[in-house]
Image (cartoon, rainbow, N blue to C red; front, side, top):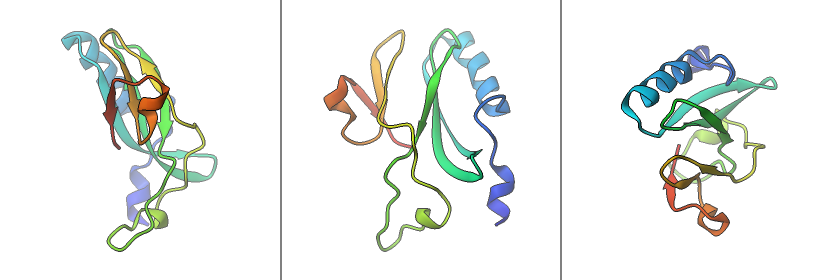
Length: 110
């Protein structure tokens, strides 16, 4: 599919690198959603960038919707990172459902 030509690996991803510079300049935390290519598969992924520009890590969407109106299962593989809480300068944040039970104070959805 033509959409997959936009997929990039996590490490060295030019969008993440640009957002690291912006986060550092503006002193903000930025969750960067992107189409990831890894392990001969595609993932709906988020890299969390801290206010100093540090890449805190990666979350791959675990639960791919399979309901009328959702087509994600045809494009993305289920993630393998598990649920994560990222300790940022300002708060502990999570990406995804049910993460508040692990200590997150904010949620962001890819």
